[in-house]
Image (tube, rainbow, N blue to C red):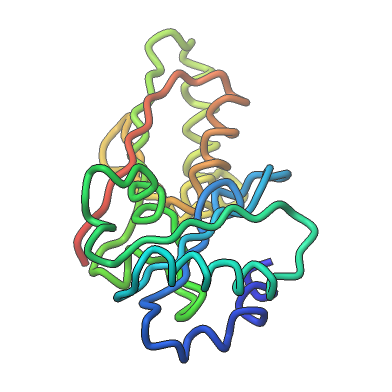
Length: 185
């Protein structure tokens, strides 16, 4: 899907008023059936009227079956707390121009910190879950998800793999909390 979008919008990269076009939301989070595709067009400059006109042109170029939700914002407005989608864009957004996470374009990598609790588990269940994490005869969840165990009960997982990590924790009935973070390169 990202490759299709990049192909549809490759001419937009030449538009000097556009800083970047970012895809974010459920499509990037790895959900099997996202409701729509969330896109934000980040402009260097332009009146709202000009930007909305450009958005309509972009919508016409996108030939996908899914519903498209396109937002527009000026680059300097992206950093204001009033722009509610900024967290999703910073954490999970993928640049259609550069094919990299948006966070890396601004000097960060995005992750989720999972804190999980095994106090209510039996010794056997704890051992079994540690095999799930580290692997026994096969690679474990940590390697598969490119995750790091920061200390017992705390995992750092790349944002692109958080949905799968949550599924694994739920499957093993492990209670957890999740915090999304940006880490400076």
